[in-house]
Amino acid sequence: LDTEGDTVVLEDGKTLGEVFANAGLDKDYLTIDAFNVLADYSVYQRFDNFNSKYSPFRMAQMRKIFLKVDNHIEGRYFAELTKHIFSRFEAKKGHNAMAEMRLSIYGMERHEWIQLAKWVLKDWPEDSVGGSWSSGPVLSSHNRWLIQVPRLWRIYCKKGDSKGVKRSFADMIENLFCPIIEAT
Image (cartoon, rainbow, N blue to C red; front, side):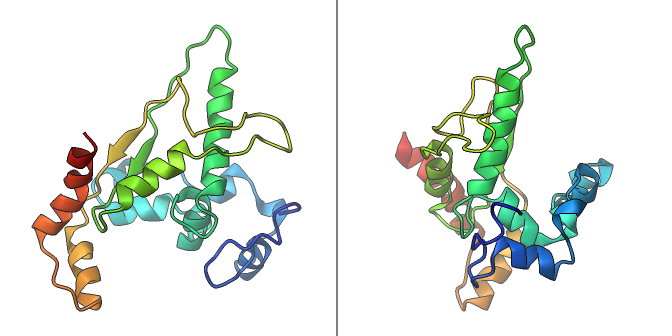
């Protein structure tokens, strides 16, 4: 918050400092325990529980700011967090620590794959504060990216209905798989 407080992080023009102030949070409250994003058995069967558990401070707005690639800052904070984790794996000399990080493709829109690919492959700047990661894409030989497809058919239909568009299950399947087939 000291260096990023004035950064506009939401489409409505709110800065990171304003988001934290509106939530009643300050920099002294930023601990791993306060983030409260630990998984338990309840997240594996119900996506609503998953979303709740993976929202820092139990706030969807914070999840969008810190853990999404499609936000006002183009997923910058998520890229920085991820690159920091990768740098820790790569610094473990003699230990072969690996990860299988997951990203979601929802099938809501056809451009999700290209948006995700652009985020991963973007030439992100190096860490200017602590120097823990180098510039470049969000890739590491110590990580294998997995793509997960949440079961959100009902939400997909409701989103279409709210826009006056009739969406079918076939549309969602096409959004998920046609970009892969077209790319090969």
